[in-house]
Image 1: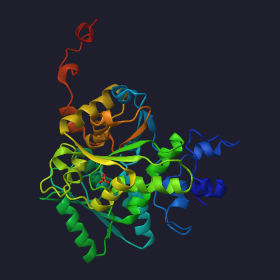
Image 2: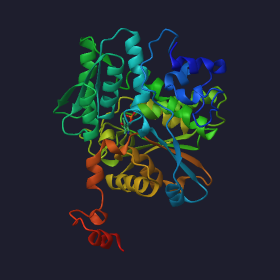
Image 3: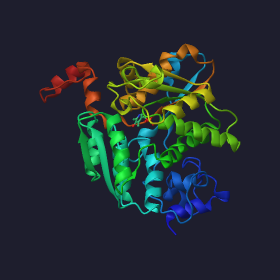
Image 4: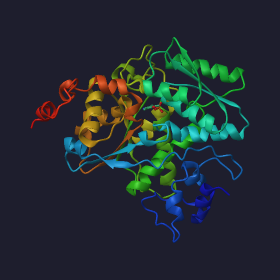
Length: 385
Ligand SMILES: *Cc1c(COP(=O)(O)O)cnc(C)c1O
């Protein structure tokens, strides 16, 4: 028996394993040292796995829910805002939640290779989990539109990286066809196991807050994650683990906002490359989520995205990638609609280190003092002493 299985079976009724901070170390301290087992073990009874499923995990999930008073203060009215910092997953984005499930099921079905289209993070996650499961990974990306950190990951994890002269929507159409014709398993979010894994984000939010939030703000690209979060909240609600359901507030970049426009966008453009998608695969599902949750879709400009990106890093020490900041930018944009005393969770889907170029380009030179003489006097003077 592996150590992770030992933890899961130690839980009565196969309940989710509590967060590490909540768990008391057992008398010999074993639980503390073993840590979080990954989300399939933690939420096994909510997921389509059996005892014989070969779980492929990098111990993803269990990411922190962090209060962000700098955002709450900009709204006032006693509102409390938290960020679900999913950039702390093993490959730096929430895509790991879906990929542990998709690759586990691909492995169970005997697949030897996986394929995905990607704006970057899916390729990093697919590559890492495929290797972890001893499978081959093919990733199709829009040439020149993938942030540097994500490309670095796909290459380092040993994926075959196919950079096409076309956008994400074209890449997705291609991999759908390829996976129909050739023996490679499609692991984009049209693969239903991806959403199954991703719904655990909602479980963790409820486990941390003790209930669902009033609003869940989330960036929307291909619209899989908003669909998955809603599924997670609904399942927990049915089990009585939360007493209410949140309004699902989806935010898109203004140049790439098909959910807001109500039709596909032919040439989507935005600095937030992770959500540069004009024809979301889960469009209909996301519309259903909006209806069922009395939510809304809104767009935010690249400028608003970068403002939120800087507030999070510069005032709260939480560095996310630009696409992720769309959730906070959107919340600030519609702050007048927020009810007093609401609890709000913004999903920060990816890590800021993914896209160092945008970080450096959008930083001020005012506090970057280059080329200083290496003497104390010079440095102290610049420090203001
Ligand atoms: C994939 C991704 C999104 C969009 O998620 P969808 O499920 O495609 O809507 C948002 N932010 C980041 C960082 C992503 O990697």
